[in-house]
Image: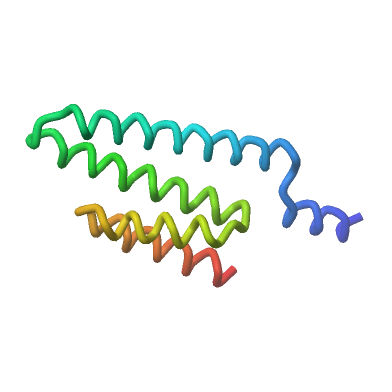
Length: 102
């Protein structure tokens, strides 16, 4: 009995995978909306939009890591590096390192 419990703890349920894919779609829609806002806004607010975009890229990378979609992780990391918020890049790298250790 304990062997089956151990296997079920390490696997993802169908609902969890569905929730991560829905969250990934929602984050991509938020990015497209922020790109539209970025084009329409003044320069004073563009810094805040870049900050929010880096947060969304971090969420996309974490969700891609859950889905084991490594190409999307590296794409998100590259886009985080292009934004001006460098502390998110450090947080993301520490998250990946801690997750790989387990």
